[in-house]
Amino acid sequence: MMGKMADNRNSPEAPGHNGCPVCKDLLAHMRRFFDMLEDARRASTSDWLTVEEIAEELRISKNVVYRLIRNGELEAINIVDTNGHIAQRGHYRINRADLQKYVAAKKVKTSPSRSTDTSRSRRFPKVRNHLGL
Image (cartoon, rainbow, N blue to C red; front, side):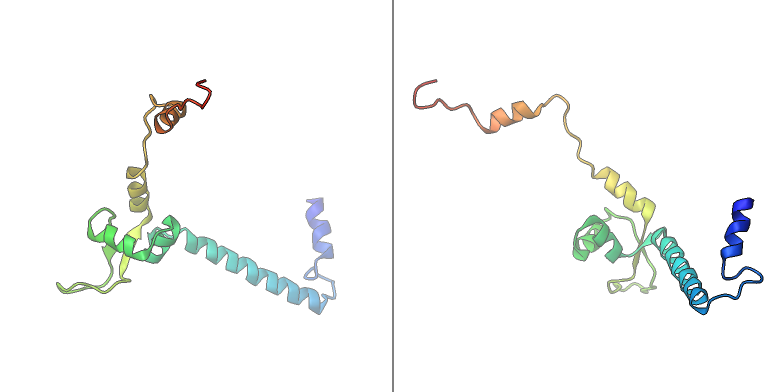
């Protein structure tokens, strides 16, 4: 409690404080900055992603993402009513949970029985040197 009171006395908005205009301006800019950070945080945690965001996150081209959607490998919704026609690109939204399911299904599973030494010896057979050793 005492710490808060000490902080308030030094604050430009504290009662009885003249309030430096530069400090007031700085505080206003800081409030706007933190509001912008909060807006960005909320936007980045959206459940719906665009094709562009998926491509960026997976580091693949947008064309590959469209192909995954067309082939049914990645579930998406079309936010434009097409009336039976093929919609132009840019109208798909993918739920983050569906993206996570797709990625989980694509994980590479290695065989625990293989060791890296054995696979290396298969790739590079032992060769005798010129001395026969």
